[in-house]
Figure 1 (cartoon, rainbow, N blue to C red):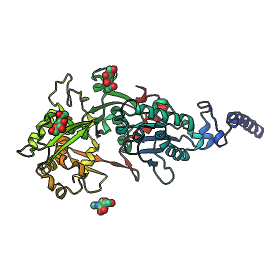
Figure 2 (spheres, protein in one colour; figure 1 turned 90 degrees about the vertical axis):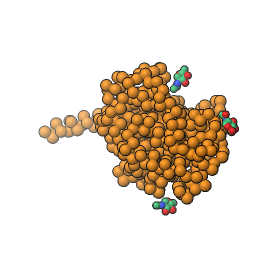
Figure 3 (cartoon, rainbow, N blue to C red; figure 1 turned 180 degrees about the vertical axis):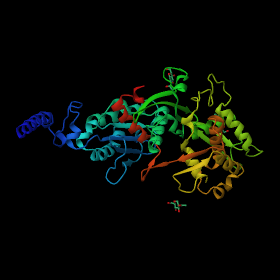
Figure 4 (cartoon, rainbow, N blue to C red; figure 1 turned 45 degrees about the vertical axis):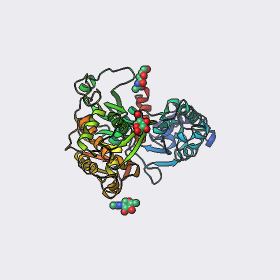
Length: 462
Ligand SMILES: *[C@@H]1O[C@H](CO)[C@@H](O)[C@H](O)[C@H]1NC(C)=O
Ligand SMILES: *[C@@H]1O[C@H](CO)[C@@H](O)[C@H](O)[C@H]1NC(C)=O
Ligand SMILES: *[C@@H]1O[C@H](CO)[C@@H](O)[C@H](O)[C@H]1NC(C)=O
């Protein structure tokens, strides 16, 4: 009995030594750490970071560059980093301020990279993705300035970082990616990711240049998806937390909050515009084009503003499918994945600045009608009275408060066909466990990139 035991023990010992052999042949001592990735799947277990995943996400915005480091357990639940739910750091100005000096642009994020690397255990660094997504600022640079900056960032990641790196992880995010990541973030924070599509929530994100809608649809609706053109899909297949989703995502360029103003001015043919507050005589510039911004002699008129906005949205454009949103775009077929709605970015800021949400609220539940009711007040306010009527308004927005509210209401109700009496959530942050996390693309991107490393289906691959 004892002998038998010893034999088994001996065998175990031998196999353990065998098992450890490749590890001890690694030169694991700080900067000399070199690993032949993928060869040692048990490395993590042995080094005590069992099934942890880190992701390092850079958000290169127009005014600042930011880094988020997220740490997940094997169920993709967030684990703390130090005392916080994530590591976050930022630096100003944004990459686009270095249009003439791409190397300086890349150097500006080196301190962020160092902070991120400092919290990722060294043995996990080769498996930890570093992803940089650029948004508004870089998109607007002329010629190849943006690409040159991204190329320098790629060099930085490739040559100076121990994190996992791929060329196409450093890129300008397109609207579909932003919309997808927002959906993943919100559903992750609501703890609906991994559940049936019918339990998930829809997201609509109103940026400055574009508006994105994303929601999960049934297999049946996914099969009705029109094959538009090869590079423009409506439905993405994604496997997240073990569940396959058919995700309807569409980004409407020119219909973000700032771009839509230009569309509404175009619809009034650069003449006077009934959405502009009485008493204002000025111009609005978007994309280098100047538009006349002044109310007609008859004054601001909400009804006419709404008609003009419907025209700008091309509500009545021909629809080749069963049902369209606006401008001839397929609506995805609707369904349970669209029942609960989360509105973010400019939907939130407008609601906050114009008093639809309580002062300083990071989220709220409202009826879409609240935008219309506030529009009635805004459209009847003279430009000189805006600050007393709406004390939290941003100065630059004053002449456009009527236009912006009418646009949001018309977009949601006439454009997306939502019920005006429906209650929706308007969010900047969502509560997750005991923390407040931003309803923004980086977290969703982290989840997507980690899921893609384990399941090989990422929107990056499309
Ligand atoms: C799709 O490809 C066409 C032709 O190559 C191009 O003009 C268009 O901008 C592309 N659309 C998108 C959404 O990338
Ligand atoms: C619109 O009108 C303004 C002021 O009258 C003018 O400066 C501008 O060039 C016009 N823009 C277009 C696109 O016609
Ligand atoms: C909102 O925040 C500001 C600035 O931090 C503060 O002065 C104000 O009292 C807050 N308002 C409410 C209602 O909490």
